[in-house]
Length: 72
Image (cartoon, rainbow, N blue to C red; front, side):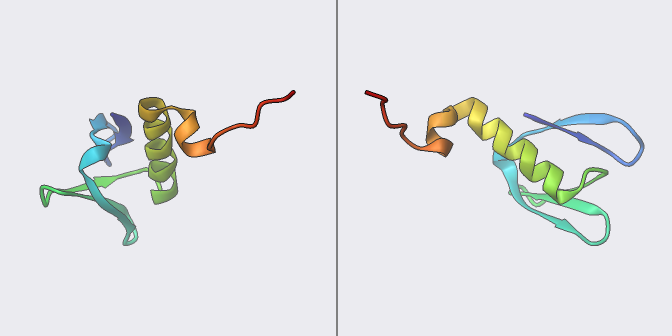
């Protein structure tokens, strides 16, 4: 789950697997695969960073950094 802030200041946890897309029009709107739209304070780039961090935690850094060469 990733944290996001609603415009009334309350924190929520968002399931990143349900994110269809994030847009800035001018407020940040997260559209979920369910069709629900969430209006949040964070910028799209911040949601992107949190999504990447989430994926790294789930799948491990090796997936994103590729194989490392062994030093001999």
